[in-house]
Amino acid sequence: MKIIDLTHSFINNMPVFPGDPPATLTPVANIDKAGYNDHEIKTYMHVGTHMDAPLHMIANGKKMDEISLDKFMGTGVVIDARGKPVINASILEDIDIKPGSILLIYTGFADKFGKPDYDHNQPTITEDFAQKAVELKVKIVGMDILGPDQPPFPTHKTLLGNEVLIMENLTNLDLLLNENNFEIIALPMKLHADAAPVRVLAKLF
Image (cartoon, rainbow, N blue to C red; front, side, top):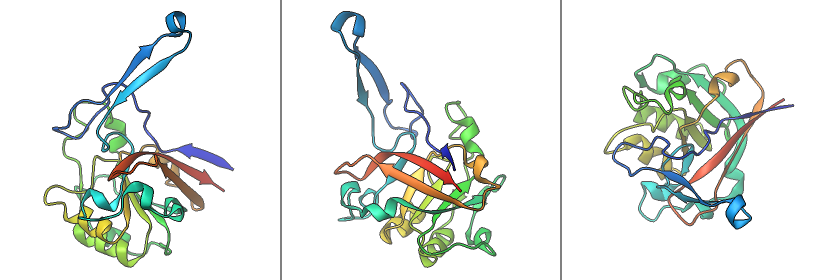
């Protein structure tokens, strides 16, 4: 068995969604002076590798701590979408995706994470892709980009409106391209909120 971490480390001044305030991770106590180390974290929820709960886009949708635990793990399926400016439902043709799967979209943009052009020219994941994912009864759609769409966020709303969770800013998806049998475990912080940081692991068999 091998485990691959699909999560970016949370660091000081890491990339944020354009327009959001900086995310900071600041030392507030030093072991040499205080006898212990401690840090303060300040961040919006949608920073780094995180998971969107339905409340993010759906009025009265579930908060992260209201979601059943079985939603956070399942058989993984990765789709190679490198070089595609638009990712639509056609990419799902002829792919075996069983109900309860966790669907991951590899675009290659994780290589730019932390660089000035990370948020430039990211692909769009279309509403018809989202609708097909709903029809396939996947639990989560994850991606190595900032997010699937732009205002008015039709893809977000289609997925979250059907309680298909969204994971953004993943990494290391390239390591799964030749793997046919793996499980995803994605455990978000138990927050009474619309989203949460998430640790995402792929367990290979």
